[in-house]
Image 1 (tube, rainbow, N blue to C red):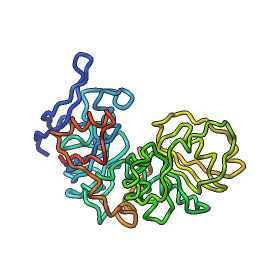
Image 2 (image 1 turned 45 degrees about the horizontal axis):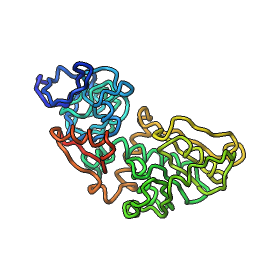
Image 3 (image 1 turned 60 degrees about the horizontal axis):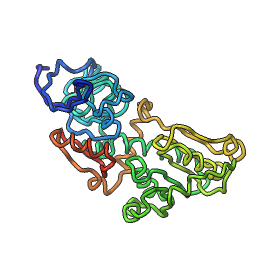
Image 4 (image 1 turned 90 degrees about the horizontal axis):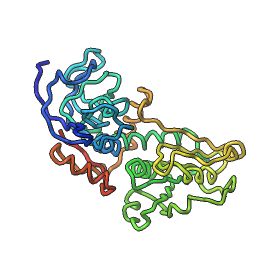
Length: 328
């Protein structure tokens, strides 16, 4: 392909400060990989905001272009796994971490990182889901594969991207969803997600020190970790299951073995980064078909590269709402 110029958001360290600028790059500037993709849409995630702020726990080397999600059209693929013109979704692996990500008009990646866009899903819709929607769907998948004893499921962190999508998918599948949140006044929002009950997160933050608590939940999707996860596990019914995918409350888990050896509770860790390609494809197919959210278009706010930096600032300040879709 010709060495054309294109636009990208670049994060560069200057005098111990991190600056964001829209720059022009060339195809030859891209990292090694057997697939070249023209990016049509990306999305803004908290991990992207951290990378854009110079967080070395996310991105080690700068200058860098964030964007852990990308959706676009294959320009060339040396592996022959895809054809020119195929529409693909790229999430996970090292995209946007230390490999330049979706906040640029072209990406070059290993072809195994890509999944073909399913029928009944547009490129923009795939980025409204993004890593958050994929993680939520993977959590639901693992939960339902556990053959829960009943239909009552607790979701923690339900106002976040993963929690919101999890609530909507579970409700669509006929489960009775309880949302544990610090935003109990936002009942209309949770009702629109299909939530049956809204409780204060303080109700699942038990500090009594008891080994087991009253059985309440057939299943739990936890996005926050810490003592709330421990409380949820202790409150899960016999043969119930819990998934875990976040640590915003804490990375520590103050738990004992009794829920597992006396109630047979299962705990499933959710990793959306290195998820098996076959399972990754199956999850995207579900998000495009029977798990597809009818109100998906209303969830995503579209911005361009020129407006991306101020949306990053809003996210870092905790003032971001909904899903931010980046049109390249």
